Length: 110
Image 1 (cartoon, one colour):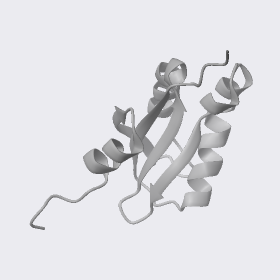
Image 2: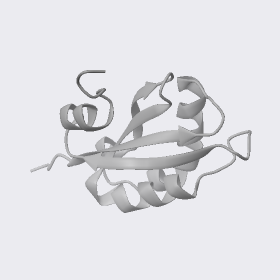
Image 3: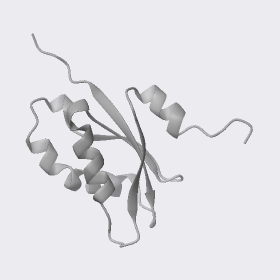
Image 4: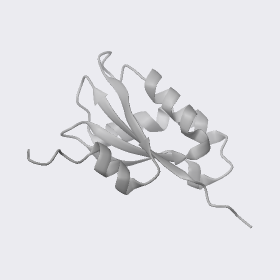
């Protein structure tokens, strides 16, 4: 019996220079390439799910066993063409719905 990988969604923000979704996807792919090589399940592979170019916020899906490694790689990542650019981890959620509500919705009344 095959067990489906439990997914986690890591919300992040890019501080510094502005980048588009394609550039973020390329950066994440190169950063997380070593993690992806040791996977037992392709479902656990880190993947960019959402990126808001205006707010420079994104959502990255990964397996629950890779969460610590992914967070470590993101927090250490700097210098995406510009030394002032940096990933800031906003938080982690178990569902896309909750992640969007917590990290991407604007406060009511604004």
